[in-house]
Amino acid sequence: MAKTLKRTAAFTALAKQLTVGARGGPSLGRRLAALPRMIKATATRQYDGGLRVAMMAAATAYVISPLDFIPEAALLVVGLADDAVMITWLAGSVLAETERFLEWEKERNRVVVV
Image (cartoon, rainbow, N blue to C red; front, top):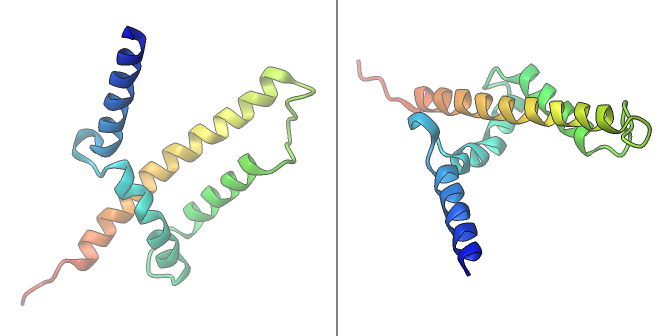
């Protein structure tokens, strides 16, 4: 029973941290919701994130691809490490780029009265 309560408290704390933005930044939900808009704005050349979005797409393809440059079966730890590094880079890039995109979106939607 005590183990269940601790687990519930841990998941509750995790959920709270994911919904509240770190250091006053956007929440994870807002960032993930911004991804389709960011891709669309990049595709229509409204947003200048072309190379960064392309690199994130390539990293996603690498992670989910069944082909691997460093196979886990042959080189156990090294094979897993390259995937872990790629996932870590991808997560950081998505967080940074979505924050940048949300700032760009906010500035773009600001009305200037002359």
